Image (cartoon, rainbow, N blue to C red; front, side):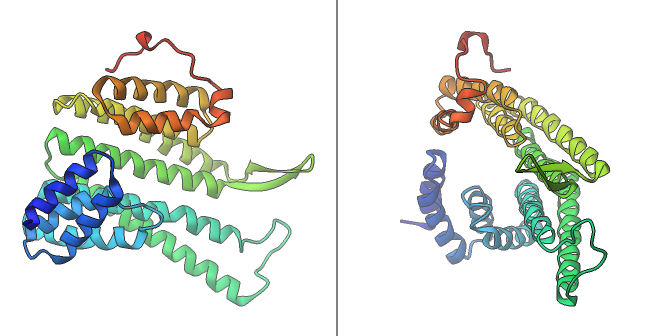
Length: 293
């Protein structure tokens, strides 16, 4: 089987939702091919198969190498997607950095670090945070300034929404402080400005999801709203807005059934199997009242 035939097989597996088998084939092609354009194509496909947490370093490696080669071949379509995924991957690391900082942050009644080593570790983490944030924003700015067709624009807007959402989540975490009340640990807002900024980025992210719906429909692909509504549902769910999460997840499920996107249907059904989602919002809705814009 030729390398290009293997790539086509991997793409088919990816479209069917068999990401693990697609990932194995794409990695093999990516590491062995000497065809630069095929390497770029395999990199673009591979990043959608990798796990953002488990494959974090590999994701960055593939993005960085793919960006370099896409620039050399003037492949602006691939460059946009690789730059945006690089930005999202870098921003996802910020929450882990903030969490690590919180583990060595002083309590409110202390005024200095108990050990010099803790101070150095905190400062090192802060430098990493600032560098990751700077690199991510530069990647996003460059990507969104490039010319692109509506299909690429759809994917770029989705990635941009993910990026804004990651910033909002990180700021939300950074603005909170644990507080013990009635025998339980609660999170209170200790930095109102960071919390306000978090809300701003979250609002922008959700607006971008709606923009992605329009771009997807403009590209002629009727399945694109399904993916956008699914991501919107996840967004509201992560921030504990369960009624809105239910609304968008049901729209995604209806669109997925209508257009045969089985993996979205299965994913939504799995989410609704969560007892909290069943209790807060439920699934009793008339599908005839839901339309895919």
